[in-house]
Length: 173
Image (cartoon, rainbow, N blue to C red; front, top):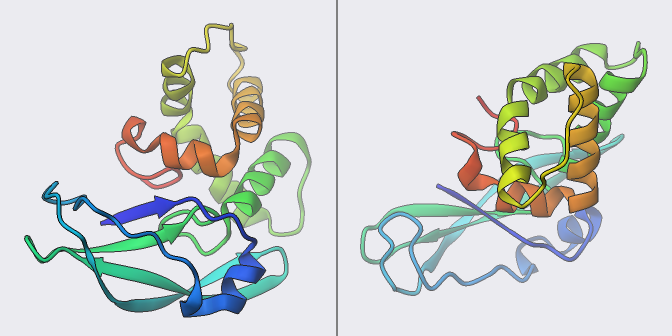
């Protein structure tokens, strides 16, 4: 299982601190819902790419002493199972919707397709948050409007709070 948490530092700072980052302590197991203090269970390393910079960063794992399931603590600037950061993916989607792109065309089109497959869930999230406005009928214009709403809401906040609105993680199938 993956739990995302809010990080108030940049990817570069996070990578520099490595295992010395301030990881949250969970008091409730996300798997069994037991009210127990989860214990650190080591780290795994993953790539995080932002622009032209690539970092190897530690992801903290914790284990429930009750059900013995492990959980990964993923910083808010990452999307589960994606190497590119959340901000980078959102910029690529915006490029794919508003510009003619030659460089990184396949990656941008991949993100764009995934985003279009989740438009309904994105809309339902904002409806649940109280948005009652009218959205454009044209799919591309609707996608641009919802992407602007994600940016205004805060990309990391959107991904963290929208977890229950998607059948999987944001941008995953």
